[in-house]
Image (cartoon, chains in turn green, blue):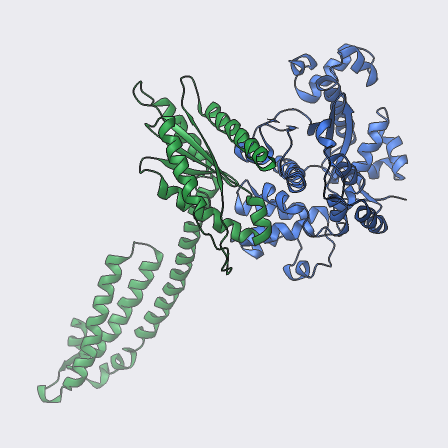
Length: 284
Length: 334
């Protein structure tokens, strides 16, 4: 800036084109604002450096243009007016490169997000279909519950198994089957208390952990879930006709010296019994 | 004359399994290109349904799907969908079998049409029936072994469920250790699942084999059976062919087996290597399975087993058994 003053001399007031001053001045100011916001909103890095350098070079070009309005250059220093527009395209090119890197950065950020999802899927903590946590997570929670058990408190478990899920899948496709499981998951969540935890066990089976609960209460809750599922008028896909579902439930209460594996085995055994009695009921 | 096919031969005429797997993966949001990467398969070709694929391509596809999805239920889901699927006439034969025993016989004699990747050896002892299952084209990784075993069991169980409306008590013995996703086994296969058994075997009581299916038709069965016999492919996987031969001739040498296959010993060696195995490994596998069956099912003593496996004495047998399984015959008994 000082350099430009040194090269030229101030124009007389009447020669200044105020319209140009306004236009070029505001662009210069805007670029300054851009630089400011870029600096505060982006983390440091290649993309940010490139963006700011590009903007700064643009700023230089604009500033020279702006000063033009006030300063008259002598013949020998007239070169400065010819090169003043040169930095602008360089700045633009740098910003374009920055934009390209930005795009790459964003893509890799997206990929990282997907990886995060995968990460959870890999370690099977969340279940993709239902959005619930998976059996692995439940097992950790049961172990935690077993370890923190006190004399006063006890906990119970519920296992739920969708009846004829295979037949439904066969009739309405797997996509509808997945949707159905998601709806059941939501219904189960609606029917349990805030302190309870519902997870997808495997396939069409769910498992619920009820802390500080005796089997009696667990049975009541299991019953409520069964009731609410049997009342769901589920309409697969575009079909206007409702399909009603039944869900089998069984429960068990923690007993001393049980561990996670024993508890889950108990539930599996109970479920097997429930299934057998259901089959005999159908036959009879 | 039976044709022998190998891992890289494009011999799987029905891309049934591959198509189902691709569909399942796409439903779950897997990128199609990533899924088919380095399988040399093209979605357009597969959907036309007229291509033949090699076991290697299928294995690669399974591998990709496992890496991309990492959900443990793929094998089980696939198994549930497998039957009746679009298997054609053979599914109708199975549908019209009069009981489970007949279903099993159909599965075994039309194995190439149904499931050319694994084969069943059928044994009976007292009031139980046992199926010993082996790979027709070798095993390539622990993941591969697990996936195929899960798939096989899931197919069997869901076929039973479909026809009988319930599952029968089946006992499953798996050669590998208990996986983390044990709950899938509990839900899909039932409570009787054992691991680290050094054999892949399924046991069922004979009384379940003879439960009659009221809705089966003898006439339809024969009709479709006739169709199947016409389209029956007389081809068998290399490892399956060799294992069946070794099962009957446990002291065969590599040279004799090569002669049986009408190839040179060097070629046989090379081919076995392509299938991730060796002659000695296969021979050991057969002997090991015989020993385990005789110990756990027939309850025979070491003397009798080492005799039947042509060992010079029991000490040698015990030593060999330790080498195959890492444990002694006596530990397995208890």
